[in-house]
Structures are given as structure tokens and as C-alpha cells.
Image 1: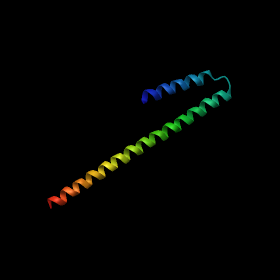
Image 2: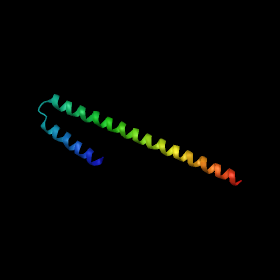
Image 3: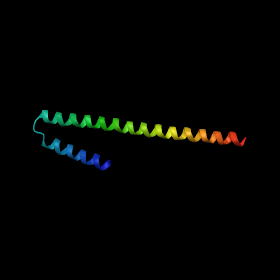
Image 4: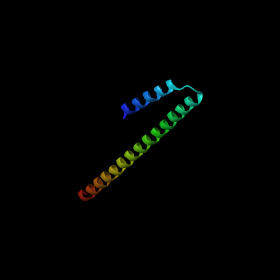
Length: 73
């Protein structure tokens, strides 16, 4: 994932260097901002999914431990 991000950044830098008009520069910058926001949102979704899975697994383990404790008592 990091390698992909670095490659994408290098591609964008090359695009910036080849811009000949302010409009081309603005278009490249707009794409960079859009991609950055999309990447941040995707990362947030992944973190939320992992957090949900961890919370679910933890809840199941707590429930299991409580049932074992009740049987032992």
C-alpha cells in the first residue's frame, strides 16, 4: 500500500512538472486533493471495519468467559 502511494505521488509530481498552463496545474492539484480525500475515507472505512470485528470478537470472548464462570460457581 505504501509503495502504491509513493508511486502515485511520483506520477503526480511528473504531471505537475509537465503542466504548461494554470488550468492544467489546477486540474492536477484537484485530482491530488480528490485522491487524498478518497484515500483517507477508504482508510477510515478499513479502520472502522477492523474495529467492529475486534469489538465483536471481544464481546463473544467475554460472553464465553462469563458462561464458564457461571458454570464453575
